[in-house]
Image 1 (spheres, rainbow, N blue to C red):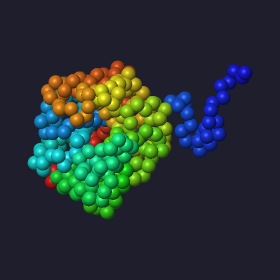
Image 2 (image 1 turned 90 degrees about the vertical axis):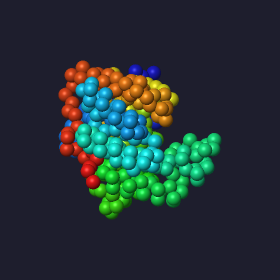
Image 3 (image 1 turned 45 degrees about the vertical axis):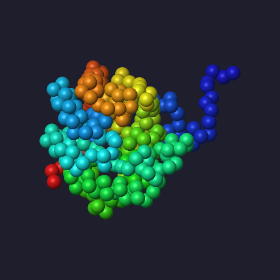
Image 4 (image 1 turned 135 degrees about the vertical axis):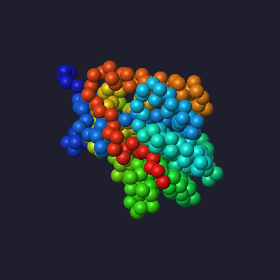
Length: 314
């Protein structure tokens, strides 16, 4: 037998490679040459900031510890928050130079018409909406949020993302509004991330367990798309922590957001108390420490980048 290993799927690999497409998980790793609009290689994104109280507690502790935060994510759906609370959250972030990205609803878990989602095969639907009324509510939420100064929206559905793109292109919502695909969109390979980019996504939260070669090919296929990469994960989503890979992630995937702190919770819908906030901030500190100790030269996202999703005063 030959000393050389012959790989399976050889014709498929040959075709992919000849067309400069991802063909293997054993490709040599290379540093990204891309940066954020406005400069910089990485930002820090903190999820599950679903109320003004949690926002205030988390921001206060991050500032006390001298830790960077680029933007926060509200993840349950902004329709669960009053106009007054949304405005207070946007004001606090704007005053402190931090972005705030709100999730659109309704998602199927809240929607009376999503009967299939609640059945035994509902997982295969994901969080895709299945009726025109839900699309209308999502469009209305996008208008409501942006009218209050929000400049970052999270979509859970490719169709909703396409709708948001059309709204932005036609001036229904401000041109500088940034669109983010949730991890529930299951962006798990370079072709899927490209599809979301083509349909309006400015950033995608990747599925949680991807390897470095996949991130490299996502970057190669979509040089300007921001990759929001979870560095630690809720217990019920696997519970893994990949802080030791943070230096490689920044080098390979730039421009990217280090999505940090989720492992402070078992489930994203769990209640958040002061202890949860403290654990979340400790995880952010630890991830940043791994990056700093590595000695790599990586710049934080520029202050003028639209991809910060900074709220505006209205």
